[in-house]
Image (cartoon, rainbow, N blue to C red; front, side, top):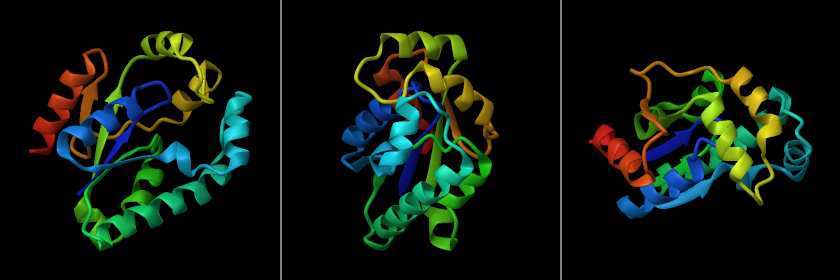
Amino acid sequence: MIVIVMGVTGAGKTTIGQLLAEHLGWQFADADDFHPAANVEKMRRGIPLTDDDRWPWLDRLRAEIESWIAADRNAVLACSALKQNYRARLSAGQEAAREVRFVYLKGSRAFIAERLRARHGHFAGEAILAGQFADLEEPADNEVITVGIDATPEEIVADIRAGLD
């Protein structure tokens, strides 16, 4: 199984994804590590990415997901997956459709903005948050496991695990 932990920047995808992978004994990967340098530079400068920026990145992620499935490896991937067509691209194909589950980390813009103001050392900051919320197409609850981010990381992971079971 591949679990994709999704949400806007600052929602806690990496923190929760790493902790979930640790609890499950699975591999963890951060989609940010798959961005080309040009995308990282745009985000660092507060410039929102366009769909044209994202397609090659999503294709790289999909190839990685397919390799995990082919190798019968379980993994947790932290990835924004903001739009429905991005999520469809990541889970396209018969095998992926069965193997990929999405977890949506949901929080208010004000809560996440406060979090971002306190975060240091990450290339994506508060400047791109408005663009991320503008791009976000919230998934329906029947498509994903939706978890609020106003709890502790351990509580959030427990909620995700309950949803996966």
